[in-house]
Image (cartoon, rainbow, N blue to C red; front, side, top):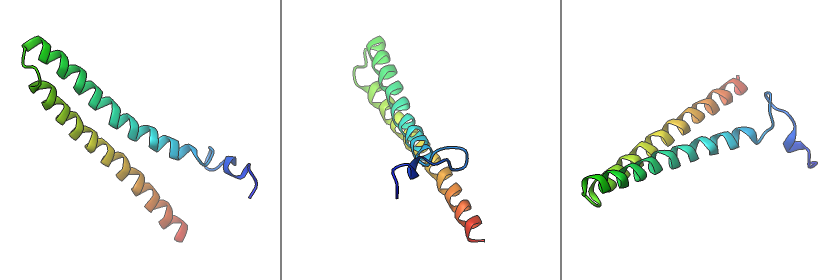
Length: 90
């Protein structure tokens, strides 16, 4: 196995491209909803004077939203892998 085998084009791109794409999508689903919930929750708590309540509720909602998004992305890729393996076996 030479060092350039991992960089050979496959389906219009390099082999590691799909892995990085999945990692990026999952990372975005982790970071964006939780950070938005935390910043908005902290601002709303400061505005209404309800120190940790809105912050904690929105953090929980952001966490659930992140879980939903991650499951959706992973399910999509699992289906693609299953379809590819079925096509390869036929």
